[in-house]
Length: 294
Image (cartoon, rainbow, N blue to C red):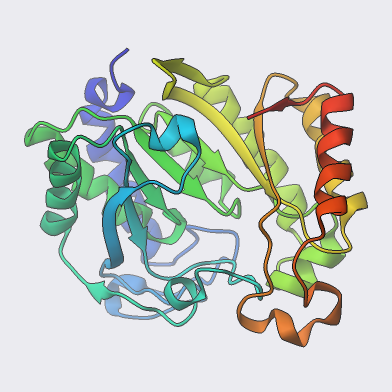
């Protein structure tokens, strides 16, 4: 199975141009800041018209089907359009740890990770830097890039942007963080997150379909991640119900490693680790309704 973007070079160029045009009055994400990032203006995400990268390496902390035996070729992009108060990567997402770089350097990172034997190129939090990624991809293809591309997102993406990416990304790895708009508002100041993530998840699944693997390594498809929050078992169950009703063949990674990072201490209800009983209750429920658990 070849990566879809290898057949879509003309589309990649067209999408790149469209994304840069959007950045002149930025609506790359649902924050709709409408600032001119190409002139150096900075919106909610914290990034202007130049790419900022925190790090890149062979990542062995992802799902088994993503990391495989040689690692996922992961590029961590600085900044974020959600800025969850409990983010474990807050130094990257909110304290803006990283360095400005060039499009050519990002393309070089992709080729280097491929040369190291990584199974894929995994862009972590690509939403606000997607124009840079697409331009770098254009260069990397000419240099021999062939690996599957992973769009690893918090789930607060614009439907219009995800539609433009059809045929470019091989694997979508979105979070489905909250079902309640009140919870989303409290922890991300994005009360529209739940309705938004539902629409983009449906579109992602439409594009790539259920997870497909070869030798237990993902080649194409879709995995939903859900991190269970303390005191939010009911919210997690509602997410499982929605997935079962709307995308019954989706693969779901139910995660129980929540810890009270960053500003979580300011929110008493989440200022503790997740209890084992909470994780097991959600997992049992998901299995009971027939969720395809990774």
